[in-house]
Length: 338
Image 1 (cartoon, rainbow, N blue to C red):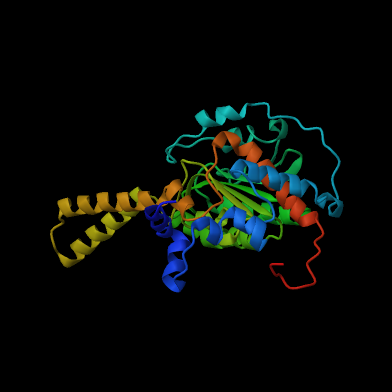
Image 2 (cartoon, rainbow, N blue to C red):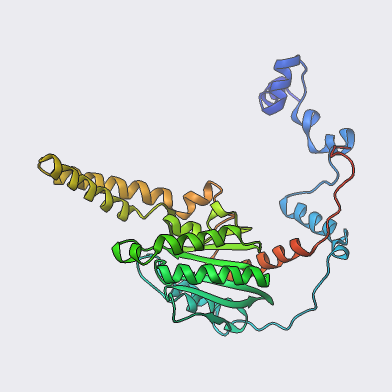
């Protein structure tokens, strides 16, 4: 090996640091290479050629642990695929959250046999509560056909308590701009009933799985199992938006505040400045509410293809079921690298 090649390799990573600290000359393989750790230090148990090979090794090792001998397995169930094809989801849900759609049409495309029982369908109609199963796993499904009104919040709170009593995990299909505002709704007990729904979301003992499929704004994010209420799994569709409110709503709110403030001071309204402020706020809010922005900051467990919803929810439900039904045996000694 030429002298120049030696110095080139020493300039990389730990080799360069070692030489700077101790004066020792070594290449990367001698210092911390895979072969060295597998043959000399004993740090490596299994050597993989690449990521795919590593995953195969992990699968083989877990299969040989016989973990299921500590978990009561249920009988194999006969499952019915949805009557409607999951690929239809791509054309069912509009990208723009302001365009409404029927959430039952979505649920029918990933629950077993497209079969569900509708809880209080004629009361609080913008909040949909359903009983269904996914790959044989019974669950309570909660979705939005619009903002959450007092009746919808009251219904959802009761439904969550019933699911908790029946030990049914709750799956949230989050697409709401939040709880309704205005004189009519405040007088109708929006705060009272909304707080009951949020309290139920926070305190249920059953597992929670949240799927952000559209807008997830304001307190609606909390009531619909947002990250602040620690769902066991939280997945996001690419079109989902999460924030205090939408960019347009924030801009309009600040526009109204600025106009009222100017009128009180008796000052003329600068329409150009207000338009500039509106555009800046919309850009700022929308950029930070985007699914790729929030997911990139680990606010969920990942963005999924909407057409894979049935598979992902089925896996999540099976995982939380196993977590509740598996007996664990903690080590009796301290964790150490042996």
